[in-house]
Structures are given as structure tokens and as C-alpha cells.
Image (cartoon, rainbow, N blue to C red; front, side, top):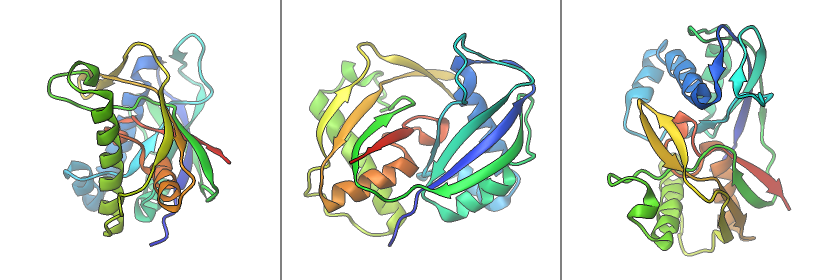
Length: 232
């Protein structure tokens, strides 16, 4: 199965000011309410399955942390699901919530080139019932869960079983010294910014390209785990 990562760039007009720590939640509400227009995608939204899309905050970045009413910003959304990409490319345009209104949409496919590094622009989240992962798990356990999550999402999408006997990355770095707050569904989770140096083998490159569209770790449909990439 040939995977394609679809990148959608949505321009939105803000109907009210949005503080920086509410941006991803506001975008998530916008996307969720558009999915609710169609019974198929409402069922998808409400189902307990990998959503396989991710998105980042608004651009341009506001240095004072306030995204301004009556200004226009761009939201980038990525997915590996071609049907979802097609639906979003239509449903998000002219859609509105009390905070924002869609204007125009552009869509392209992220080219397949050798990836040397993935680095998260939004927080990587691993949810533990006991709280932040550093309080309950070792770094080795964190890495195992990151890898397992990526492979499970890949297998779920392709219907195939990836051979897990390969080196995914040669180096992993946490880019923050302290955990960073991530508001999500009325609670505050804690997450991290990550950098992964991707190994130069077929499976590692396949998985890295997939994660560009699906997001790393968990809560991707809430705005977590969105990655940028560096080509070799």
C-alpha cells in the first residue's frame, strides 16, 4: 500500500480574540464541528479508533500570545487518509464556529524524500492514569510506547503488520527541561517537544513519512504530536 501524506492549508478569519493556550482547542472544536455535518464522519469522530490526522497552531505566530479578532491566519492540517482529506478540503471552507470562519483551502501531497529528522511543533503526549510519564515510567518505557503507538497506527491504517525488527531512530532528544501544559477536553495534560534522528532504512523511512501525516504519540486529533521534518 502506497501511503500519501496530504497537507491542507486552511485560511481562517477570527471572529474573536483567541489566547495562545486556547488555539489548538479552538481549532479542534472547529474541525470536530465540521465532521459532525456528515453521519459517516460523525461516527468516525465518535469512534474509538486512530483518527490519523494532526494539525498545528495558527500562522503567523503572535508574539504577544493573542490571536486577534478580524485577522486572517493559516492552519495546517495533515492526514494519511485520502477520504478524510477530500472531506475536510470541502467541509472546512465556509464553516464557522463562534471563534473563527473558514475562507480558503489549499491541498498538496508531502513529497517522499529521505527524512533525516522529525521534530514536534506541538507537544508529544503520552497519557498515563497516574499523570506525567516521568513520574511513572522510565525513558526506555517512554521510547517503547512511542514506537509501539507509531506501529499500531501504521498497521491499523494499512491492514498489514509491519516487521518491528528495525532501528527507527538513532537519537531522541527532549527539547524542554520541564513538562509543558497541554489543555485538552477540559483537563490539562503534560507533554514534551521531541526531536528524532530517523535511521536510514526502509521501514524507518516509511514510518517517519507516515507520522508526518498521522502525528507522533497520542491525542493527535486534539493538536498534539504534529511534526515538521528535515530531509537528508
